[in-house]
Image 1 (spheres, rainbow, N blue to C red):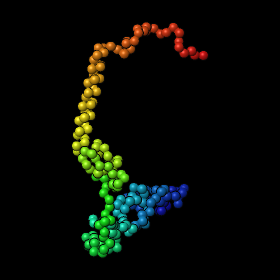
Image 2 (image 1 turned 180 degrees about the vertical axis):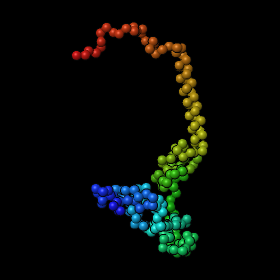
Image 3 (image 1 turned 60 degrees about the vertical axis):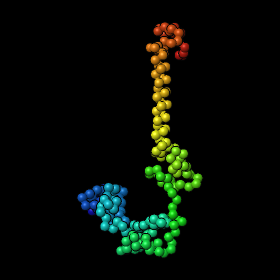
Image 4 (image 1 turned 30 degrees about the vertical axis):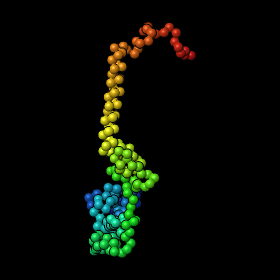
Amino acid sequence: MASGGTEAFPDLGKHCQHTGCHQLDFLPFTCHGCQKVFCLEHRSYKSHACKNSDHNSRKVVVCETCSMSIETTGYVGQDEEAILEKHLKSGSCDPTKKKKPICPVKRCKEVLTFSNTSTCKTCHIKVCLKHRFPADHACSRGVSASSSSSSVADGGWKNRFLAALGSRAGQDCAKTGSSRSTSPPSTPSVKAY
């Protein structure tokens, strides 16, 4: 029973090969780097400290001038600056291919095009349609103006409500109509058969 399973089913599942774990796992994961079997907890390269974690990885550097990504996996021993300099001198670096601007709102990655761009009327910043309202893009002039106007409007509404409540002078809603007797009606309005 060294590879896995139970006494009744010796071929069912495999034990985690992480030192100190050896959990029997019925859905084991095989690491692509070291070809060992691991449980769910130890399946990532980092959790089992795999020495071959970058065997299939691809690394790229993004050019600031043309926004082109240059693969660096084939250039062993060269640093990123030398690779970027070689790219600039190669003639394939074209500044006109630079990526379009994105929405300046934090964590928004929407690319601004002519059809989805809106310019704020108060702060004149170009944002995507999702953040076109001043409250959505933290507009410096729009938020303070809208919050102060809403507080005035809320205060006016509250004052009108309190005035109407005070004019009732203790009257209860149930007593405003004709006086009703507290005894139940003699004939029920719904008949049960």
